Length: 83
Image 1 (tube, one colour):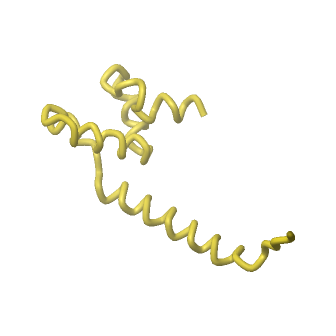
Image 2: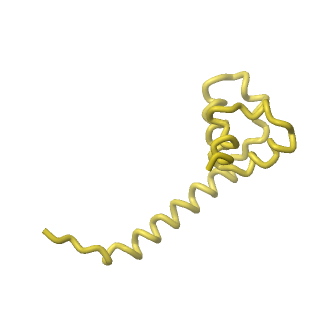
């Protein structure tokens, strides 16, 4: 969990890491979303966000949305409400 926290880029900016460490954080979708939000707030970040991939982030979000809806459909009739 701590590794995910540091590689997400929420508290620690990725420019402080070595390039080898930053390379692995690019595969983290949470990192991608945070960098996109930072890019939206400042125009200076546009040059530094060349590592953000909208297609990767979009497919990841759509994949988890699909899995969540599939799981909800599968478990919809399994719950009982007793009052």
